[in-house]
Length: 475
Figure 1 (cartoon, rainbow, N blue to C red):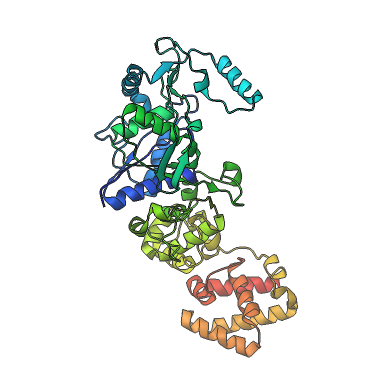
Figure 2 (cartoon, rainbow, N blue to C red):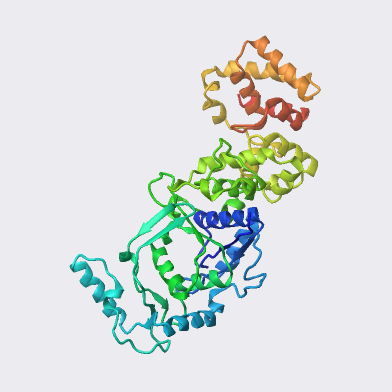
């Protein structure tokens, strides 16, 4: 495969959302797969919408997820600078080429006049096209007025790497602004210049730009340039699948997911699977597998629904694949204050017990608190338990006393505990859902826990029996 240069070119106007991460991920995968380069560029020409700190935040997101770029604003490269506001002289040079060839002109109208043209088109029930009001003798461009592209409307047939073969008519090509009156270029102009000068081979971007591509192609022709290949990503949809995912649907900053204990490799796996699969039943991929198996030809044309439950399931799957030492290193900072005095060895043993049930790292305190401190008796755990609430309180006390007597004779190895608890089932004739749940609640005061014998062994004999005594007193 020929090395392919791709780019991710966000605007520093807020946090990096899922759709943006997916665009970056797919561009990164193509570059890595082909042995090419992945370029980061900031498109910051809309100064009114720029958010302070957004640039560093975007960089942190990419680095946290492991999407390392080969060229960018903070590391430089052969095509620097990688920030549009630092490339204004380049845009002016290319704009002058268009002026000299008669393909750009100064816009003589005020915003109010343009709005009047737009409103008249609405009254006439016609689409508004600026080229219908193109001035016959525009003034010389001195930078104080917007500079517009003089389009050459025509039909286009093109191939999109995701959407396939597309056709558009001349009616969608119009005279758009190249450089605004504040001296900054528009996205429509600047990205074409940047991608040309940075030798980008493939542009991956969102569906919202699809309608503008005929205008881009018209500008490429006017500049005498060959367009890169293009791939259009369908929208990431909200949980109901009816509309584009938004903050109102619970879409979060990607770093919020990391702070909650979602693994970077999970997020990459999950985001890659939003609209892509490798034509197999496989759902959980390592990052290396994504690099090896990814293909734009397997990206679906329709939108992909964001499913929080599937993300949780996938994160649990990735957590279960980790070596214990690796998981323990990643768990640093997620333990509750009650674990502060515990040894690394004990915490690793606790982590090994909950690894199968752990869905994200921020739930470690909730799942492990009873391993470190004795919790007060919570009567509702029995009174609201599906099976235990059906059993008479006196019978529960008798059953728990029998369990205590049996456990008092154990050496508290996992095997011995397992054997004694199973023997107690036969002796009492009780269901595991009653006997084991009763012992579990008495020794953990938690609604759920890892395997009973394993938990008791780790808690130790003295602590386990003491907690059972506490529950017996409450009963």
